[in-house]
Every structure is written in C-alpha cells, then in structure tokens.
Length: 448
Image 1 (cartoon, rainbow, N blue to C red):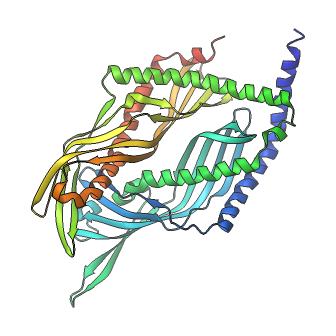
Image 2 (image 1 turned 30 degrees about the vertical axis):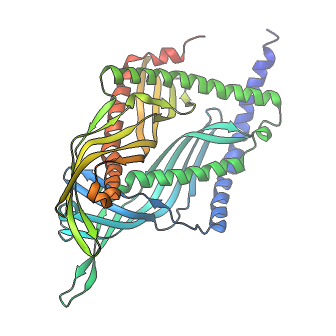
Image 3 (image 1 turned 30 degrees about the horizontal axis):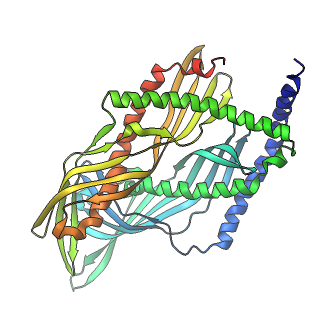
C-alpha cells in the first residue's frame, strides 16, 4: 500500500492545484483575448477582403445566384463571458462580432424574391446581420507547453438580417438609374438570398474565430509554470488528460462503428438529392440571353467513411452525466448529377457534373447518463459546420463552355442547400439508432 500513497497524494495535489489556479488563468485568457484583438487592429490593414465563393440557393421553386461576395470589413471579436474547467479540459466563451455585412452581386427571377423586383433582375446585394454573437465551446489539450483546442462547437446568433437590393432600372428619357428595395427578416435562413450564404459565411467566421483563439491560448498559457515546474504534477496532469480522451474515444468509436455498419447494411451510404432547375443570364459582349439548366436526381455518396479526426473531448457535469464532443469527417464525400441539360441562345448541351466535398467538418455532441437510475444516451448536436466543393468536374459543355463557372456555382449551392441538410438528417437517424442499441453507460463504467 505504501507504494501507492505518493500517487494518491500527487493526484490530490493536482486536483487542489487546478482548483486554485483556474480563476487566475481564466482572467489571463480574458486579457489575452482582448490583447490579440488589439494586436490585429494595430498591425493589420488587411490587403485583401475576406471573400466567399460564387454560390446558388435551391429550395422548392426558388433559385438565386450570388457572385463576387465579400465581407465589407474584417470582423473583430469582443469577449463577453468566459468559463474554464481545467479538470474536464473545457473552455466556453461568448463573444460579440457587432454588425456583419456581406456585399456582392445577385441574379434572380421575380417569383424567387416575392415580387420585390422586376421579372428578371441582376444587381447588387448588401446583407447586414446585426448584433452577431458567437457561443464557443472547445476541448483543450496540451501542445508545446501551452493549451490548444479541439472539437470547436461554435454557434452564431444575430438579432435581425436586413437585405438591400439595387438594380439598374431603365428611365423614360433613356439611360438607367438604380432602383433599390429592402427586406427584413429575423433569421439568416428566412430569405433565399441570405440563406444562400448562411453555411459559407458561418464557416468563414468560425475559421477566423478559431485562428484568434489559437493565438490567445498560445500567448496566455505556460503549462509547466501552471504545474509549478513539478515533473510529477505534469505527469499526473498528462495521465488525467489521456484517461479522459481514452474513455471518450472508446464511446464515440463504438457509436461510429455501429453507424458505418448500419449505413452499409441498409444501403444508406448513398443519398438522393433533388433535381436542380436554374434560369440564368448568359452574356456575349453586350448581348444577354436567358438560359435554362436542369438535372436529373443527384446523389451524395460515401457516408459510411465517416470517422473522427482527433481525440474526443469529455466533460462530467456531475457523477450521473458525461458529455462527449468530437469533430467528424467523411473521408471521400462526393456530390454529383449523372445528367444535366443546358439550353441557351438556341444551343443545347448535356453532360455530367460532380465534385469532391473534401473541406468539410461535422460537429457531434452526445450525452450518456442515468435518469432515475435508468441509463440513457442522447444526441445533443450533429451539424455540418463547413462544406466546400473541390475537384469540380463538368463534362459536355461544348459551345456553352462559358457557363462552366455557373455550373460550378450551382453545384456548390446544391451541396450547401440540399446535400448538407440531407446528410445531417440521415446521420442523425443512424446515430439515434446506434444510441438505442449500444449499452454506452455500462461500457463507460466497466471495470478494467
């Protein structure tokens, strides 16, 4: 027994130390967050504005195109609240981005914008999201004597969205003047033109906030100083973190194995996505032609290659509840339409369009616990956080090769507005099944 006593003492000493240093470290991180924001403001006239790729939006009979999208100014992150839990290796914070504005060009038909604009319109769009707030929840790990983070869960909310449209309107005495109109909504996904940028805009803001937070943690922490340069404490802390990750990985890996098996067994690793119908303006010199684009039913495939990309983050709010968060990716996710058709200027062509969705992440949060002494497992969150098309291949355009950028934008839009929700819905169904079938509480509390 005497050999084990120092280990127990070290673990107790570690627990006491983490409790003691946590409030001070929390304040240091808050100050670092503000300092990084000030450094970036001071150092940085950004040479290039933040841009979003051309995209489209498809829902029911609605289709709109957006291009040349960029943030009007670089967003700054202002800390509001922060909470640190060193024993669970978790950090939560809330920060404000103020007003976020995106400008660009749009083209759409009258029916798509609820009779706001002329029958066919192309013009400028300005989208303003007021009082944007980011709620951030990340897991922590040790890297080069500093804390770093994994499994970021970042959710954005805003007060309202204002959309301003401007388009050239012909005057009676000749020439053009710009006509404008505005539309207000409560949520970014309530209007076709604003919904078109929802996923890529939030992905861009997440990326910027994650870069900011990485700098904050690197500047704020020295773990060896925190552990009073005590090797025994450092070893005990590393062991505690490894044990948390090991238990979390075991639970999530079991869930993912079950999901992959059911996706394959039930032939659900390929999903159908609805056909696309788009109307567009095709210009040659000063002449404009109205063209039509349509596809057969499309597909998203390889769902059964889903896996985690790093360790699982584990928090224990109390002895009867354990929560897990992890970042997932589908190894070879693809979207495609085996046949499309385009007609414009009396010319028609057809072919195949497909893309790899390599740059994507999914955020998963699960809780396992006891309620009235009955074990339960619940899905807290599973969402697509980013989805970028790469390796876009379009065959058969021939004389309409000038429309290739438009086809790529339609494919990108289909991935975001059609494939992403279908993908999340299917994975949620299979995950619910896995949670019902697996004895996760028993597995988590099994004696080794």
